[in-house]
Image (cartoon, rainbow, N blue to C red; front, top):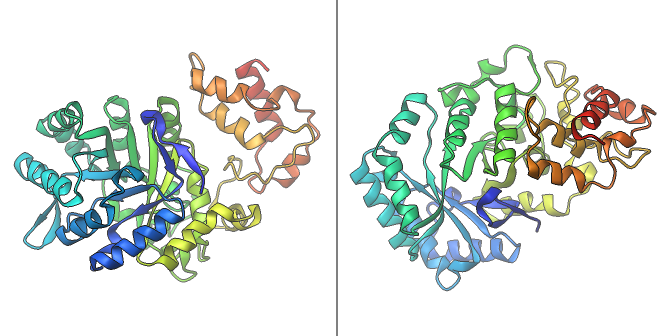
Length: 382
């Protein structure tokens, strides 16, 4: 297993993490076996958005005696009402549901208190201008949550949340299909076939700026919908008309700036193994560019996707990392200190580019790499 820092939280989390909704309907014994398998594989990060009381209780039973081995992300405003899940902004219901969460999990805190599912600007205002955010702040002051998070599918709203300075963790939907779509308040549009009927070009700039903002500000991203609800794993259902593997989907998400972990919803150890294969996969097996760069209808032409096809550089430069650090710098103003430090730690820097052009001939996206190295050298000074 590989681990990454979850933004500024100080938590080290497994890059392959576990969404627990696939455990609904399992017995306590079955769930314990699934959690045993996950822990043995090195998974230490779990997300529980579901409010199903049986799932919460069974997960609590499985966590008994090893709570401190896991980083738990629990959702606030996810409630159980009339036998089904419901998102709410009612404070009384929210408080009761969170107390239920802690009780059933057998713990007195969760590491990340995730404000659940904020996709609309009006809802964002209701949460951050009202009693919900005051309640969440109080939970943090009391130590019942250690860090504040927010889940969203809308990059415009997610950016607003990051810019408040209130949240430490963002749960966001990332995959190569969704990244083509512009911001919107209708989450169903991300799945709709008609959203992909026309030619789409390059990652949506608001999504890209969101990831870069999170990386600069130390807001850790954990990813949901990495398989697009399973559509990306199917030749028939993928908007690309061609399936990606779980390893390719996970590598794409983990290549985005700011991303620490991918929450994989697994219903079996077999599905968990398919995700865990990323940890030992070869570069060829991780290679998402081989799929997405060859599609006539969708193009990322001229855009660095951090895929690493440009390697090896004759001067030893890690071109993908240089491009990523350059993109993390605001167009104006000072270079963020953490970005400068990470760039400085590279063995070789952009100024060492000898303009041989070997990298450009290998780039599947037609990036003007020599020019990008010059821009990076100008920005960082070497």
